[in-house]
Image (cartoon, rainbow, N blue to C red; front, side):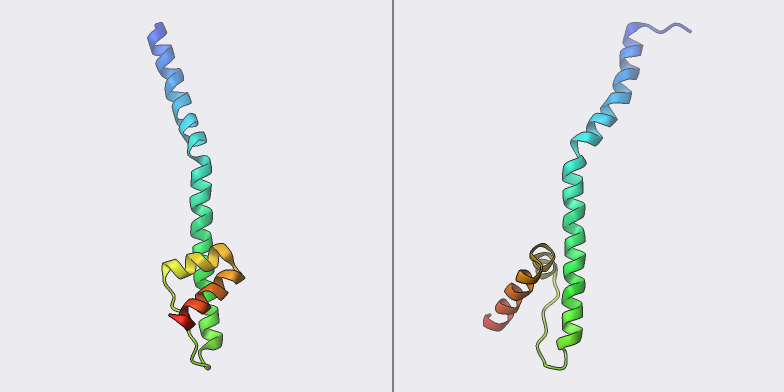
Length: 88
């Protein structure tokens, strides 16, 4: 079986292109995964606060924007959502 130069270059490119694409999309992919994780954590935090504060009648609306705000900002996000609920 003889390989010419074009075939060898094609095999090398087929091995290097997926590695290059993986390296190219590695940082945005980790950023998206971290953002989704923060959204889930924020939703769980809002759910826990609703469970604790349900007897007082003060509830936080659980939606993706509020969950993302709480997930990214943490405690300041909870305060921000509380101010929005109170004054809106």
